[in-house]
Image (tube, rainbow, N blue to C red; front, side, top):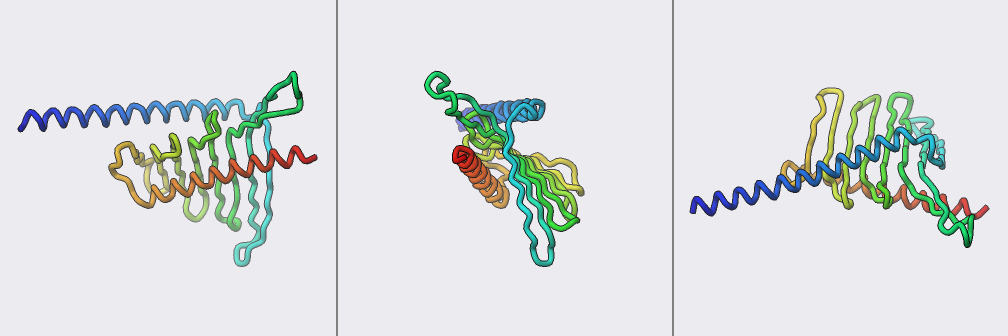
Length: 193
């Protein structure tokens, strides 16, 4: 009986270490992609959308959405003007009154799938969050607020999962898909001229 339990324990440890290693690999690649894009961001094309809305009891809210992307010719011999646009990152910055500002980055991998989200909030509730995704699944979340140091919450095996964090990650993924769709619509609008 004890030998069966020991074998089961060894198998579980191997499975969890393999999952953890795979997710560390994905996080490392996402960080590499993010840092490379940060260094070379000025070389990429940008579409910028600015919205100014006046809300009751808040005042003017300015929202700036920046789509960072690359483009390449699909078939230069047949049609040199046919381009493929590849979304790299979306940056959203807005304020709620003069006292609170929000900054968000949505990073997409080479296949334009969501892979990373970063948000920084200043003002009433200051703090930061980083969410790492692989195949549209949350793999790690890092939280930092002004009252505590960084807290790493890793969702590799389903332990320590907070329902609120899972719901939050699903909301973020939906936003990432919506921004990607919005970018595709901007590309279509570009072709209308």
